Every structure is written in C-alpha cells, then in structure tokens.
Length: 184
Image 1: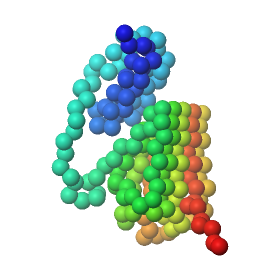
Image 2: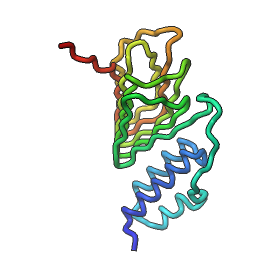
Image 3: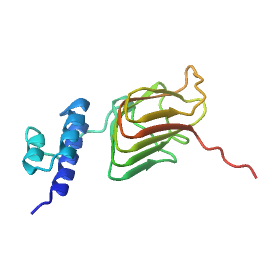
C-alpha cells in the first residue's frame, strides 16, 4: 500500500514532468501543486494527474544550434549546483520545490545575446553567481518571498544577458557577483 506522502511526491514529480514537457502551463502547475500539498485524499491526487499523458522517455535529435537547445533544472526535495566550465542552454526552466538551485556563471560559456531562465520556486531558493560584465534582468511575482540582486546594476551593451522571470512562493532568489580569487 502506498502512503499518502509517497503518492503526493509522485504526483508532484508527474506535474513537474508535464510542465517541463509543455503539457501544462506554469499557472496550472502552481495551482495543482498547491492542491497536492493541501490534500490528504488519494482520490484528489489521482484527479490532479488523470488528464496528463503517461511519462515517456523522450528521444530527440540534437538541436542544430545552441539557440534551439532548452533545458529544465529541477530541485525537488534536493539541491542542484552548476559551477566550473559549463554551457547553459539559450532557454531554461528552473523548478524548485523544497530544495535549492545554485548556478555559478563565473566560468560558464554564455552565448551572445540573452540566456533566459523561467522559474517556479516554492519553499526553496535560487542563487546565481554572475561575473562582472554580464547583464542580469530579473523580474517575477514574489509571494511571501524575496528577490535580492546584489550586482552593481550597471548595463554593459553588447555583453551577454541573463534574463530571469517567474513565480516565487515562500522562497528567495539571490543574485551575487562572482567570488574573487584571493591573491597571495
């Protein structure tokens, strides 16, 4: 017999999967996750996913250009950290539920133009470390939450831009400058 907690976790993961694959909107995801968190009836949890497709492994050809790449980063009851040398996709989704996501762009290979992050964060946090010269455009709907941008605010024309937008509930977003290496 599956416990209500295990069924709730499965329901939330299924909803996140459906959102990540474009089956439901961010607003629908938020609504359904809130209902899942607040119910103690297995029948309610079943109804929340009854109209969704079964999860299937996705087989896709590699995009022909970085502009076509999309990525979803999920931290559900866990933490995700990206640092060192890495190449962000042009369009990204961040999904955080009772977890955290840390993205350190210090050594990241950003494409020219805008790298977009659409986020939904509930009961968690998102932290960005951004090197000098990279523009950051952050907006969103914080509900009992906070967004703190500790960068200088200077705009650098022609430099890469990270655009962050979405919904934040009982959580926080913090944008900090990259750490400076200590001199000896």
